[in-house]
Image (cartoon, rainbow, N blue to C red):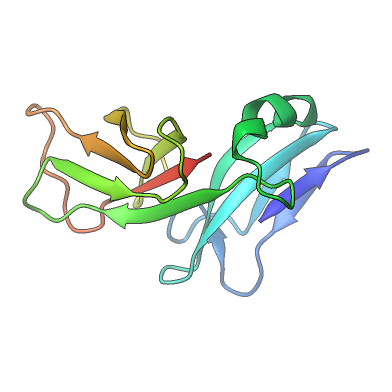
Length: 148
């Protein structure tokens, strides 16, 4: 989903029981600045819209120019990960971009997580690696989004 507030600030409202960013989270997302846009990805298994990015429209061309499809919208991929065993996960995004923008969030809180994401593995994969000082991720504890 791509929502744009051209001439005024606006709220994006999820339909039905859908929420934004975290289970039992808010049902709307505010675009508080005129000329701002937001890119969201939907996880149908959890009925959650993950906010991938929100930027001024002036940044859209530069930020997403290399990833724009023929329709002019950026390509993105997202998935849940974590298995209770490993600290490193290879994520296949199939974006044909060795350096996609990435964001890792903890599903239960919706907060971004500071974790190493190794890019340039291939044009279609990244590796997410948690340090030994971090707890091993539980099953589907995290969500990664790659844009580009």
